[in-house]
Image (cartoon, rainbow, N blue to C red):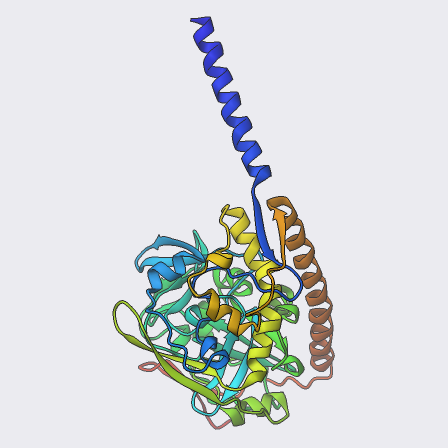
Length: 414
């Protein structure tokens, strides 16, 4: 009996040692220098049209495709939702930039290998169990977000499916009259006449209850208006302290409707150049879908430059944590990827890192981003405090609320 117990314990210890050793020994290969090492079979697929005229895209299945870059989970009541393999500080609509199009207004250009799908179909939601997850869809959009602005800053947050909002402190079905049915008729103006649109007591439970105050810092991203159009907003986002300040002080204006170019230029106080786009069709397992990508070389150059950074510092972390390898040269579309990154004849340049090395790289990169954001946020917050002390933020104009549509409108002062 004692011998059997001893043998069982030895087996347990041996198993633990094997598991520990396997964790230490797991290594992942990523591209080094200017070489791009493919993550999956569908990396930046639409850009192959720009890099290789006449190239025909393969049939795409969103379920199979996105399963290469993350995990499918069940989220009630929506069913299947997708959570990407990524670094802990990742959130949607952060690693990328907005560009202006004539047909669609502001369009998000993300740097993740799967960005061309997850930012232009379906919706992103913040789930209490899984964090940010993507709900698949097949209708193309330029970027499903709700916009906000305050003095010197512009912000956005992913908009959930129709009828849902975060006023309870978590995503819940409220019905058609909710946070995202609100339309601020004064959104286009930045004259300091009053700080924010949600002063009316009837909006207090929707936007200023303690539950929503706790969650809003996870929803919103703000950048300085001078940074709009720059590469990789992840380096410039102000962070939670700034978001908390502008909503606590009611200094933000919010609008769920699309932002037009004249309105955007009023915020930015400068002209915004338009980027031409190319519209194509891909075939999925269910139907043909519209795909829209920027035309010309400027945006493609950004993809080539920024994607390497994002893959190494953000995507590799999630793959290493899940002990998943990149597809690399075994990618089914490696020729298309090679064309996108102009490396048809390039010899693979790789570095093979342990999970611990990847984690350390990601930690340092995240720490550097956080320090930069903190300095930017402090400066922006100080600017708001100075303006507030000067008395430029006035009392709100009187408003009336259309209870049927949830629309707030100006009313002449008495």
